[in-house]
Image (cartoon, rainbow, N blue to C red; front, top):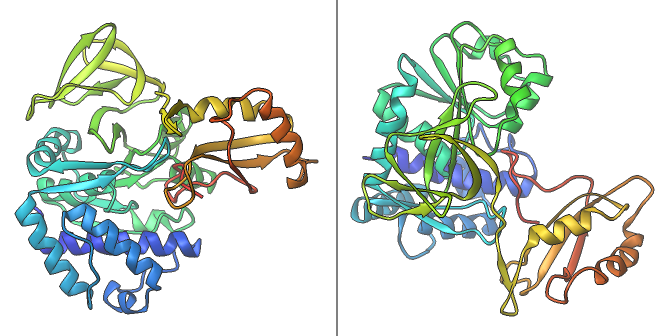
Length: 377
């Protein structure tokens, strides 16, 4: 069961991440108390926060005169609805609402808790308004009866002083990559947790070389929650015990033990043996353009083959932008946005009318969130 402080923390992280996203500075608002920050927030941040909070806790979006009043309202809604609704990142299409009932949440937490016996403290580097942060830095501490310390995901901090034996550090692949590049080392007896995106084997090996005691990578999605885990590089993921499995037409399906709905995994996977799997790639997400099925990943593949393109992303426009695809391009050296006409001509010979992006945006690097996941632009 969530308490009021948990709800306030989720609201704080919701507003903080939205403000950081707009300011392009994740640390600018981290240390300021939320009660002092709330009255000074730009109206656009407040409006987006009101909208997202209403989705998470299940009430009609509305403004509030203070964070305390908003917390009371959100907490009462949670007690009434007995569920939390999270949004997908939208990295493969329009963000979807993913409700998780209290029964699902506690089933999951009881299933993951045995992985972390002996943990004395959780160090959170992830926001709690997303499912990963919520499960492992809000609910798991209640189950393990351990405190939580929240720190900014800044790799250059004095980690040898901040961390101590028995800590579980909840991070993500992009952070761990930069953490290693900074030459950091772990004190004795520290555990590391990673999720939100695949963690490369070389990063996992590097963490152990830096003195890590135990590593846990969680494979999951906003739609499903935590599905499987592994502790070592090169290992397959083992499904958590609260999932039942079935193979239909050669494809693995899973079902939570607390309900009767079979679902397909969001990725293509290789089933190694009973309850062990290797994720291969994200299943292509199909979107509709003027009623026609279109695959943005296919358009990305074709666009990336042009010599001007170093990297790219293609996705469906937001509702207020239109109903076509849009593209973000990182150019190779020697090319500028003035070459857009050449790129368009190239695409026109390979794509259908519905596949052709309506708008093109250029930048020095692909747009990603603080946790390294694709974001809208």
